[in-house]
Length: 266
Image (cartoon, rainbow, N blue to C red; front, side, top):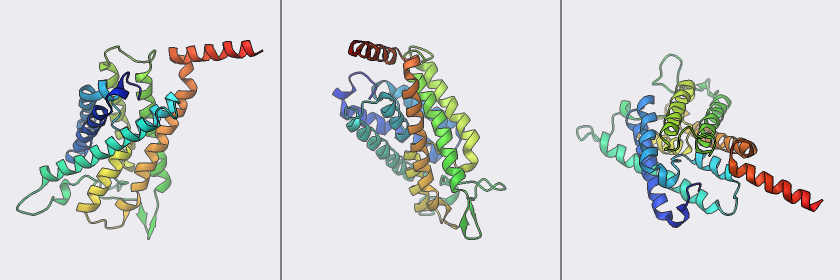
């Protein structure tokens, strides 16, 4: 949406956004390591960001859409890019299936399957948030996802700003994004640490297919790992929309034009 000329290469934007999301999600499914995950995002941004804007996350796309406030003009792009990201997530599922499949077992070993859920305080490999037949962590997971995604997406929107970008070549901005993601994972990882609806959907469905959902936490909390990041992206987009006039020359120009029109009307 925010990349000049992208409207003339919709198929390429779709393809690159799907591939970038695939690489990012594949790292999550294959390693689960916060550093590896963060720098796989860095690789996707460097490889595809100049064409697509480097979203690879429906929450980021929603934040950009709200910030730009071109509701009708960008609506089709919102759908196109999010669809590409979801396709990328499912492509990552297929790639992970091929990578981890063991002929001798006939399936993927359970300890190799990534999952997103609240973690047990005593064992990070065990899903928590369920006690005495009741799911106990809905509010905590939803708020954790919303707030940390809002921080993450806000940093991305600042990096994309004309006056707030740390460098003209985008390298420093990409590093700022991945380091923010790393900090968010370390901060909110105990409650799942997703911050991306495409990740929540693709990793969630993959884990349900390959793992036994003993207490139902994998299925139950999936909605929070989709809805929470979307709410966070919308919150970041609204914040940037309100304040963009203060640090974006385009916003300041628009504000000046509105003031002139108001003065003429008087």
